[in-house]
Image (tube, rainbow, N blue to C red; front, side, top):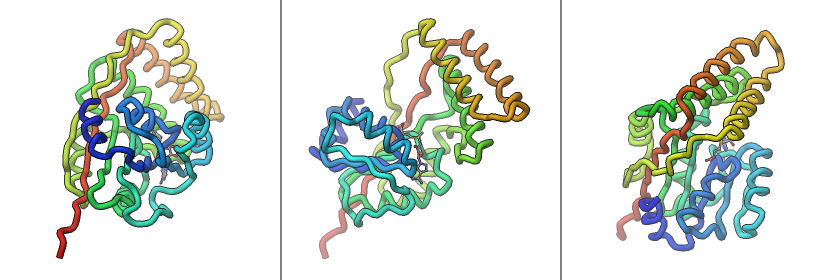
Amino acid sequence: METLKKWLSAYPRAKVLDVATGSGAFFGLLLEAEASLDDSVGIDCSERAVAAARGQFAEFPKLHFETMDGATMSFRDASWDVVSLANSLHHLPNRTKVLREMERVLRPGGILILQEMVADGLTHSQLSHRKFHHLSAEIDRKMGIHHRPTYPRDAIRSWVRQHSTLEYAEEWILALPKAEKPNQDETDALFSLMDRVVNRIVDSQTRAPFAAKAARIRAYIEKNGWDACPEMMIVLKKSIPAPR
Ligand SMILES: C[S@@+](CC[C@H](N)C(=O)[O-])C[C@H]1O[C@@H](n2cnc3c(N)ncnc32)[C@H](O)[C@@H]1O
């Protein structure tokens, strides 16, 4: 959190654009890093996600959410101080196009923050998270929704270095507090969420192999516990053109 705070302190009262915002979780992280959310915007291509984000952040009247595709944004060039993409790289069918757009709307001197859950170097309890996440990704794909498995650290780093035109300024792993061992209520809630995810597949024959996989994951979680996967953070900086 200290590294994120350090970066944000260089942009007091920054106008932040969070792309593929979902229910706005990245703004929660910004609040923890003591950033102001005034005049910031979250966009998502799903109207349902935007409605959820509006509900979550109803107490922040100067934070807005809009339905918009990250690959074709209607914002002017160089109109944001900070542009972010959190836990969504593996959700984008057209990630290079979205990255280009994010770079276009970022002002010179501004920063692009990428946050992405990693798939490698996990403890046994973090593997529980990855297994469940990869099962939901597989179910999404079965239902025609683009959702890849999460990437190992090296794959994230090399994709960004290869495709971004910005300066690769810093990379770190976000220190999340180690979760307490889940109590029975939390474990029950997790397993009922897993049931709901599997039950999205209506046809029972198609659902059967996923239900069997979910049962194996449940046994793994009962044995090994649960912890969130680490999050890789990357800050890219847009240079200011030298005066002529
Ligand atoms: C895992 S979710 C949201 C993650 C959220 N940023 C967070 O940190 O919790 C991924 C989101 O990407 C959105 N999405 C996928 N493709 C998109 C696109 N081209 N433009 C905007 N949003 C997109 C989905 O609708 C979904 O809400």
